[in-house]
Amino acid sequence: MSAMNAEKLAAIYVKIRDARRDLAKKDEELKAQLDVVAEQLLEICKEQGAQTIRTPHGTISRRLNKHYWTSDWDSFFRFIKENDTFSLLQRRINNANMDQFLEENPNLHPPGLQADIGQTIVIVKR
Image (tube, rainbow, N blue to C red; front, side):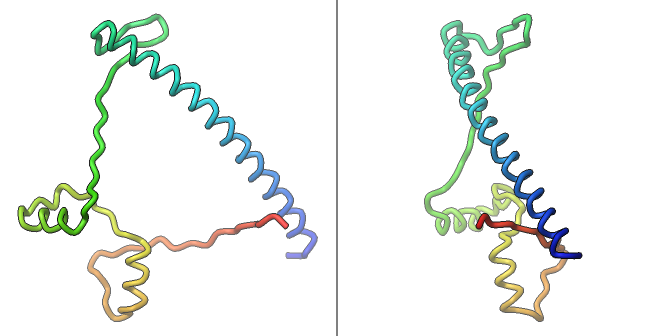
């Protein structure tokens, strides 16, 4: 590929990336507006003691969201092991730790391990 083609493609890439950034900014603004409206709707549901409110535009549903975390992973993991409650954890491999493990242990391969490795292009503004 010639330098001219790379130059044109880099310009196109930067233009598209900047357009996506602008769209993301606009999306953040819209999300903030939605959050304000959602808070007001939640207050209306609380005031009415309602879990759902039907409107011509759709049914408003009040839901309870729960999110758990620990401030002490060592103690929490000991608890998991002692009570054999590994189902409390998500099945996910820490990519950075696995990468380091494989580099440090080239002869050890965890069973069933799969990898999706690809390359990307990054263009930094000058």
